[in-house]
Amino acid sequence: MSELILEAKHVTKKYPASGGRTLIANNDINLSIYKGRTLGIVGESGCGKSTFMRMAISLETPTEGDILFHGKSILGLKGEELRQHRQNIQMVFQDPTAAFNPKMKIMDIICEPLLNFKRIKKSEKEEVARKYLELVELPGDFAKRYPHNMSGGQRQRVGIARALTLEPEIILCDEATSALDVSVQKNIIELLVKLQKEKDIAFGFICHDMALVQSFAHQVAVMYLGNIVEVLPGSSVAEDSKHPYTQALIGSIFDLNMDFSKPIESIDSEAPSPLDVPVGCPFQNRCDRCKEICKKERPTLKKVAENHQVACHLYQEVEG
Amino acid sequence: MSIQDVSITYGKNPAPTVEGVNLEMKQGEIVSIVGESGSGKSTVIRAVLGCLPGGGYVSKGDIQFEGKSLLGYSQEEWRKLRGTEISMIFQDSGAMINPIRRIGAQYVEYIRTHEKMSKKDAWDKGVEMLEKMRLPSGDNIMRSYPFQLSGGMRQRVGIAMAMTFQPKLLLGDEPTSALDVTTQAQIVRQMMELRDQYNTSIIVVTHNIGVAAYMADKIIVMKNGRVVDAGDREQILHHPSDAYTKNLLESVPAMGGYRFV
Image 1: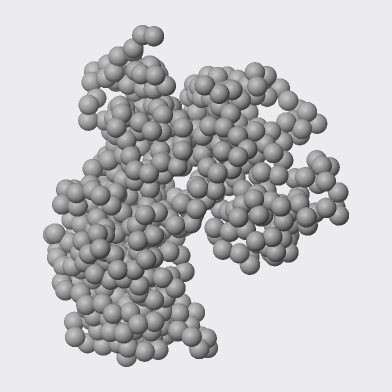
Image 2: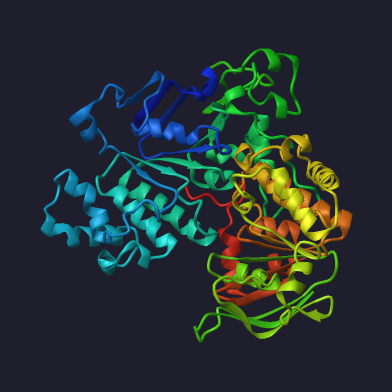
């Protein structure tokens, strides 16, 4: 296993809600990001995956638990220390149109982080911007354009270029390809994988498309209502997924090789409100294999195989 | 329903945005139009409903519905057709609904615009349609504001409204794109049931080729305002004639399929 960079330990995030209630956005999350590896986080909207990412890049602070970067807690960082730390983790956003200032030229956008940290001089701007544009397979002349002169896929490449400039150890992508067409999406994923191999960057990739995530993530975490319900290697998602929710997510994918005469499988009901998570297993009301114990006791993550953990009462822990 | 060699032009722009679209549809058939953003797929179905935005017009060809050309229709004729004979589901039904009025008030108004009915009957009809869409307690939903419903529920309200008068043709403009995969599967299944129950014809525009393939009898692939490939499902999926279609099919991530790492 490669070097551990970022580790979340028992992270819980609660938000106060109206009527004195609390919304538990993340409940006891334990996740690790390793050097040069990709961690994919999958789940429906509102399951807390973005909240987790926001805590990882120090935009939010957890209510409980700790986040360690190279073994040191990043929660106590303040002021200049925190500013310096931000160079280590960068982010690529979902909507590349909203992520840029429309009045800035591409070279200003790409070089802004470098100028902020005084790593280059203003006179070097164009040269550096060209270098990074070529890295993300865009023509260097784009440096003088404005964001609105580019297509969505090109803009997303600029977003990746900007995240790369500070040479971070981790890049977090929040639905970075969801707004793009499938063929463009494929190119962006190929680019990310290429950059990962060249620069040994760790990626955290939030996505709701299970088929996409399993195609390039080393490890996939499935989230449901603020809980991690399953963690498994990307290569075994298709065959070895255990949790009923993971299987439901896979069942509702429209695959080109599926049997079109069969009705598509899906869960009928909707997820309960995160303000009102039931006692016991959070998935109980939508699970067709729900037992008595599921309604009383919340399952914890158990190791069922190497690198594979499931939080479900249907499976027993494997020793070793 | 038939679309014959239609070209659509926006404003004074001499080059048509969409060119040479042909489509023949029978009752109860489902056709999906796939393509990337900007390929003109939404423009085509908007033309069918006569609501092209910002100075768009059909510059060539003809669109016929039940043997009559739709192009010369007056505002009044359109009003009779829309909602009752042809109706549309939008990508985000939440944006279609007025955010500061309750669902019920809008639904009743919609029903009473098209049919003479008492408010009480219209309300009951609304509740009945919502419950057909498997929304729990229709009465409760009629009393809700749009923001109190989840995205999937709002989309179902949109479909319920579109299906109120059992139109012969249902147009879907990316009806499931804004939804989670589990909700998407539910909505797709419900749209398929509509066809089975009411023999509704459906044209669905989507960029999700998986959804298109699952639903459709016929698939049309568009690129830059041109139809690059058209045919029945088997033909498009297994023997695509155009390189673009092949590329598009290969780009769809599949479970257990190609891995990048």
